[in-house]
Image (tube, rainbow, N blue to C red; front, side, top):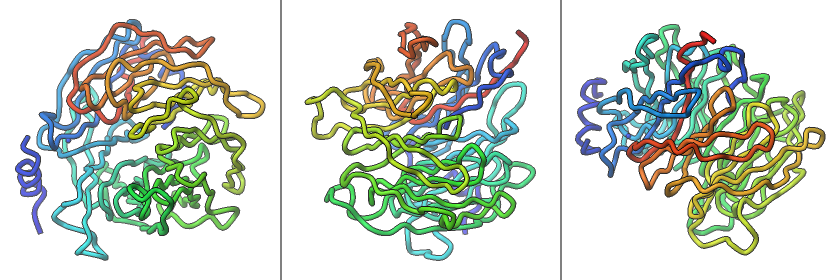
Length: 402
């Protein structure tokens, strides 16, 4: 067994150098936001997790600092108490391996404390993610559990959180099974995301490899996931759709999944009592006749107001914009906004709903757009910043003096 220090040296040598937010009064009054950016470090000159500052008036971004020797921290999540940050390490060669299947590849999950004055991250601990290539994680609303989606072998897991923010024991592991019609991408399960509903009662996992959303009951006291016994456990997407990321509407009435392979968004009714999802609409993320081989979607988010929905297109390099019908939850296309870079793997909306930041992975830049609160359209601000291989963006309010 390697010590944590030894492991950091190990991954340094290997690398050669990697939800919707509550629309609160505190967020509205923030003068600045800390912006944490997860990146890919392997094959790039990235240091790991970057901290930026976003001016809440102008949208200007400035560099603050970056971690060292953190490998492929591709997706990030911030604890509800704003004192801790968690990152997946999207790798397949974590030296500790998977506990129950030590010969299978595993990635890792890392915990950091956040300095309240500077925002600087301090490493706390790191454990195996119990699956290969972990690509998504979320902290539950009680702050006691981290849920993780492992892409390469389709395993979702839950881990308890200690009072000091460190990650503790694995509480549950669920292995997906099956395949679908795309021979390159869907020969086996690929869990791509996991999201908790607004009541912290159910979790929805999107599995690209088997064209399904899987609903789990979440027990926050025990930190355990179990298949939904109150309603339908599996929701089938169109064959070859490739469900990737999921977003709940803040009202809890609807859910939306962006499908990576067929470039669509699927809107669904959501039953908060039973956890059941019912498909009500499929809509393209690109103009008719413009789908091209190799193009794909990535992120999907509902605006904090609940009025608009946004999704990213890789290849076309656009953000698609929709209006959400407040009675039915269905989507109406508003248009497409170029992201100012290549391969927008991720984007996020600041807690006030004023700005959208697009992380362009292949052009190494984060671009800032202002959101028109009446129309939902994105307006270029002229502000952008260089970050190597940006993959994920998370916000943390700095102050609320106004």
